[in-house]
Length: 97
Image (cartoon, rainbow, N blue to C red; front, side):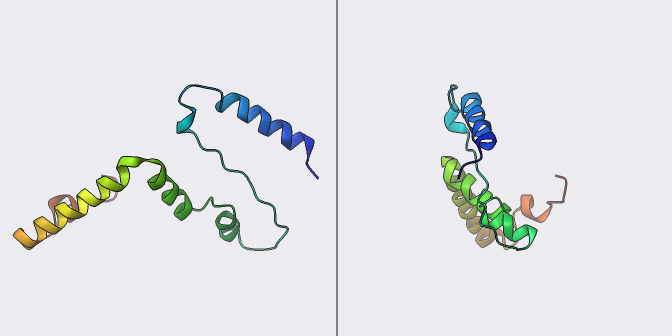
C-alpha cells in the first residue's frame, strides 16, 4: 500500500531535482519503514543515513577523494620515515582549524 500524499512529495522532489542540469551531483535517500522498535541511531543505520554510511557514500561518489586520501597516506609514510615525526599538518592540527 502506498501513501498517496507521500508519493506526491516524492514526485515533487523528483521534478525539482532530477530534471535539472548537474543532477548527477544529487542523491536522495528515502526512509525504510520496517515496523521495528529500535534505538534512534540504529534507525539511521537501518536507513543508511548514519555518518558512516554517508561518509562511505561520499568516498564512492567523489572520484578524487579516494585518491587524495591515498596521496596523503603516501606523503605521511615518506615524511615520517625521513623526519621521524608527524607531518606539521597533523602534529599542529586543532579542532576548528
